[in-house]
Amino acid sequence: MKLLEGKTAIITGASKGIGRGIAEVFAQHGANIAFTYLSSVDAALAFEKELSAAGVKVKGYKSDASDYNSAEELIKNVADEFGSIDIVVNNAGVTRDNLLMRMSEEDFDAVVQINLKSVFNLTKCVQRTMLKQRSGSIINISSVVGVKGNAGQSNYAASKAGIIGFSKSIALELGSRNIRCNAVAPGFIETEMTAKLDADTVQGWRDAIPLKRGGTPEDVANTCLFLASDLSTYVTGQVLNVDGGMLT
Image 1 (cartoon, rainbow, N blue to C red):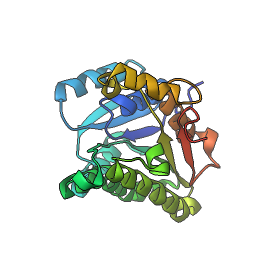
Image 2: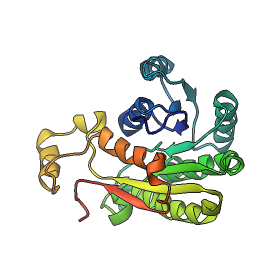
Image 3: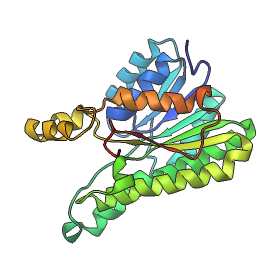
């Protein structure tokens, strides 16, 4: 059974890691996919082709979600091209980790701009389309760090905590129009980035997790699939931790 048959989803930052995993699972479940990327056009075209093999419509857009005008243009282009926008996954994000005493103002501002402002931009720009449809699911990728904090990541934690407060507020604002807004808070997810880390360090993290493993992009994607689909039509304003029990 394809849970997203005929729906259109926008996924920001989908060229790698968690975003890529979400796009793959959504396409397998019948969603038409508009995804954004910032760097390689060739990689984006290859990903378009890969996702299209699922028999869905796919288009990549070179777009910077942290820039309001770019977000506005993206929403217009996707609405014109696909006819509707049923799901938005705000996934674009960066880290610039450091202890507060060593953190530059630029590194704080950049992380908040890319991680948090991008969520405001896309949500504000898509709400008009969803209000007309009287339906929609907005899924914002936060982090367990946004729930509990983490030394050396005050900028990242602040941005991800901000996403949670924003998501709960939008759920209250748009609920009467059948538009849902939820946050997903991944824990330690193993991606291309973590593969470059010291093996003993990574194993130490795994050992500290009740399920004794790191998560996969698919683990996060399956949670997003639930929130994007009609299985969750009475779920809004929630934060779902996908962390193997890390915050239990």
